[in-house]
Image (cartoon, rainbow, N blue to C red; front, side, top):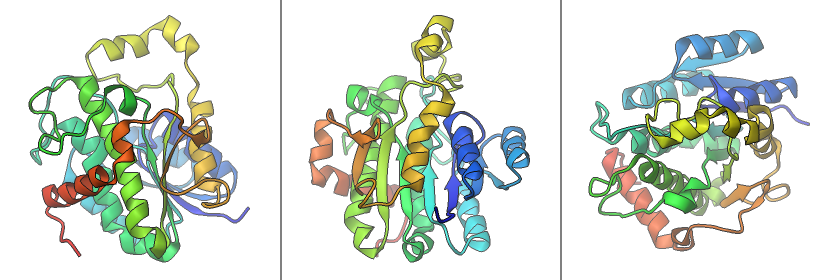
Length: 278
């Protein structure tokens, strides 16, 4: 298998760290990105790979990360937008956005956008870690993307994960003919530090000893990210598709069937981030 350069965000813990380990073991050049300096450096030191510290609740960090990656990596074969999470009470970031919306959607959208020329030149795959929560809790209201009117932590998270799928579809529509492939996937219910700061019932569920016995391990859940990262788009998986258990999901949110929603979400994200439209 030809070695790839693979950038993984949210790689300081959980499935991101496990995917980094497996991909490094398979001979790929892995670059790990994480919010926690101590945890990210620990993974980087363990594997002997490059690492970058970036907090996605600060868009300035995302812009700095993109600049650093561009300077260090003229080729990126895979960008795995894995960072994300469910949080507690409604919180605004310093950039003025809901924390869940920014960390799960706007930040990876911005990072991908700022790396587009590198990704297109590389013929890269862009992978989004989404969730079945998109189908269960998500709903994109284009006039209320941050759920100002009806916020709950799980609703905000479900919608952000739905945003990931819609972003995948629109990225495919706009850039597949320029060389980019895109996929989103549900990793399963994983026994990790996910939801550890949510402060709600989701945290209690994920923290339950009994529940964790029934969950997938990060090692197993990372296998799907590894499969997409190593796979050949068009042969092993199809671009623009949301996967569960390495197969196109059978149950999907109705809004993922509406290309206008994906297109308008893209345009509104560009507007919120003040990105030039070209």
